[in-house]
Length: 442
Image 1: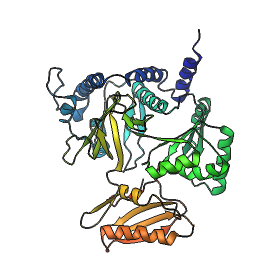
Image 2 (image 1 turned 60 degrees about the horizontal axis):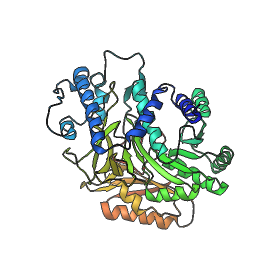
Image 3 (image 1 turned 90 degrees about the vertical axis):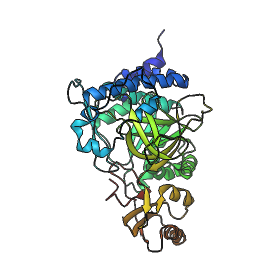
Image 4 (image 1 turned 45 degrees about the horizontal axis):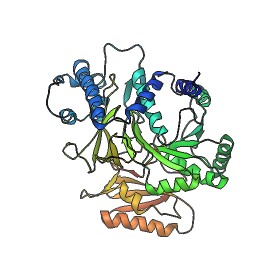
């Protein structure tokens, strides 16, 4: 007897990611099983994969040629062994590309991709079919936790461009629509909301700022969606509540990056689980030592990329790992909190820092001002960009300015400036703070 659901799933994987093909589907069903195995089994799986990766890196990647091979009889935990390796930063990949990737014995099919360059110049990452398939499978497994299947009708909100004609055709075959909301007027957003009423998607996916911007028009038009899935930007609790209200939907968030792909997804209980079968995530303190239940820098080791190995890669984010089990029953590691980018803070001449988390919590209930963005120009000057035209803006602006100056000193000059649209990165991300060491949010 034909399994219609399995046939549709195969077709959907082929259309969604033809470069990975049915290998994505194979990994998808493997991951659906492995998410329920015990912690010890997951660690054994990781240890075998990291052993192969590190021995490959030592013999094939010049950057790691001085490291000793990993012997099975060595004592010590997997994480303690991994901690002996250096922290990999973007500059090393950018400056020494041939030393940090495979240059001989390359497979026939190499997919070259560039990162978005959110924190500087983009870097080129090489993938093979197997790596792309694992990223794709992990992504769909995470989406399935909140009720999204590969063949489900959905809308991707994009803040720039409409994609290629080939990509749009593929998306339509996969029951997906792409909506561009870049610089849309209120009238255009209303038309987009009416389009969503016609499409009747089960879920909508996009950056936080884009789904929020479109949400006001959707609320007025009466659009109802089962799930809103956000990515690419920090999702703060007040934004989650607002999205849930505007779309009358469950709101979920996932964590990933262009270099590594699928890192962590929210389960039914709202907790982010690490894709342990694909990555090892560490959180390290100021001296680079792994920590649990305290904030630190997030390091990611990609267990599946042998062309451009990312070993203890500093993604530039802050977060907290915990060993506490999740009520959902999965033994996958829990990312207790994702706290924003390392450099997302204002700083004064004395070195005092005011992080993006402070502003997200302190000004989550702004009413007259729709959104704010703070760009530090010099050690003593910041531009306060804001969207909004309603009465009461002056009072809210004074409150923001007062908070910045009271915490960073009266010498800090804060210049409010009203804009039609906040400054976004080259990939459409809208940062709450653009720090002093960044020329622009590119």
